[in-house]
Image (cartoon, rainbow, N blue to C red; front, top):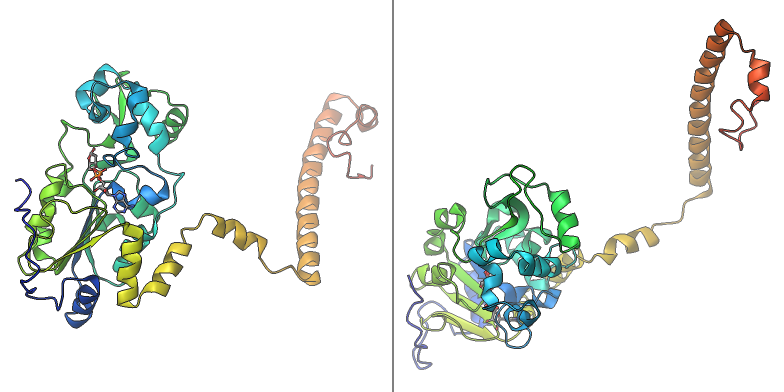
Amino acid sequence: MGNEESTMMDDTIAPSVLEARNIEAVAKYIKVYDVKKVVLMVGAGISTSAGIPDFRSPDTGIYANLAFLDLPEPEDVFDIGFFRENPKPFYALAHELYPGRYRPTIVHSFIRLLYEKGMLLKHFTQNIDCLERQAGVPGDKIIEAHGSFASQHCIDCKELYPDEEMHEKVAKSEVPHCHKCNGLIKPDIVFFGEALPSSFFDNRDLPAEADLCIVMGTSLQVQPFASLPSLCSEGVPRVLINKEQVGGLGSRKDDVLLLGDCDAGVLRFARALGWEEELEALWEKTNPDLQSRAEETAPPQTRDERLHDEVERLTEEVDRTLGLTEAYQRKVHEKLESHESPEAHRQSGGLGHVFPHLKLSH
Ligand code: APR
């Protein structure tokens, strides 16, 4: 199933549901019709402001910058046949893309906000960065159509490979091998030539049930994902928030194209909905400095609190020492039963060398 007709709607033809073909009219539609079944379809463009390059943007995209890996074709880095021959280019790239170093963008928090408002029917993503999960979107609402770095298996015997070891290998740009058969380990990302997860096909009827479709940050170049927007029912508004027009978006009467940066587009959408403050607050929660700032700004302890903590600490220390003393006494009795006197033992240093700061009375 290819992309739908991509002839743009004539501006002189009025929308059938929306008052106008703009994002403010979509915000009004959401309120008037109490929209509750929003389907999203996103790609790498929603993560670029987090610092993760997309694939096809000229100059900045991953495919424009893989020359250092001297691949026959840039997309070979995600080709399963090429990976079997030479996994090194992929692991060099994985070292750069691996989750954990990036903060979700305001777009990821907007997706979370739709969920919080009970409006998110399903979020289809092509991204492997797990930033939707990191922003707090529940896993059962997400279809990672091209897989993710969340887990990894042997490409031969399918044995699961431990997460911790994978993190270490990727951090060192090393190629992990299966503990069972020594085969190549690959993250559960869908490579060209591999089937998409069944969850994608099991949920592909949802766009037809949606009362609003939002497409963001994708070139819609890769099937079968690219066919999703065309599965939305006629008369259901579809919004494209993207730097460029893509696929068949713009060909229907109630399509709205918000062309430009997606962070700015989402902020304008939130402002039209009256959600700007909620969105900013939700995004602030993803701020990695928040935790350290919370510790720095914790209220100073009162004198009583400080005293209580000190007594707690000393009590624990005495208990520990008493415990050790009992163990020591047991040891002394054992020695008595043998022959060495405690005096002789004390001369040789006894417990003092273990806790020099505690003046243990003999
Ligand atoms: N704001 C809005 N749009 C953006 C931004 C941004 N900050 N940054 C990039 N874009 C747009 C680009 O103009 C482009 O249209 O996002 C789109 C990104 O397209 P691609 O780089 O092709 O990424 P994507 O659509 O996710 O690729 C699909 O291709 O290589 C495979 O498996 C890979 O999942 C990937 C699939």
